[in-house]
Image (cartoon, rainbow, N blue to C red; front, side, top):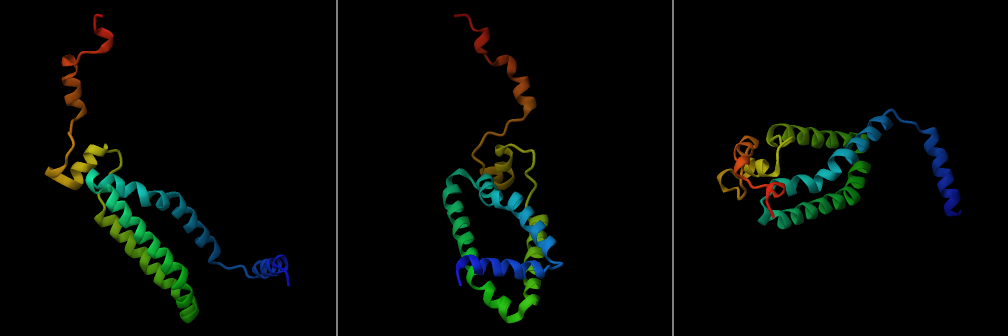
Length: 150
């Protein structure tokens, strides 16, 4: 039997087996691909000090690849062993992740990178923390190029 015929046969069997779990699974993947995939790189780079960014991102990537290995080789074995009940393992992981993010991750929306560094590093932050008010108050001391006489 050719590959094309195998694919067609599988597609026909899949059309007959509609599942009530399909829409939630597709909506989960949609949300994951929009939100969590880019954050795998963006969030760690924002929260780590400059001197740790490369090492931290390497740890994130290694951990990610280890989880891909687990999902590729271990999940099928567990799914075959306990069948549909294995989805409760995924549910437990998702609930743990949501609770962890909700209670442990500080809100960084709307903050500058300097302010984010201040949140995570406190007094050890190696950036200048300047408010907009300070900049406006000191604006008259700044010499602007357009005002300069050549």
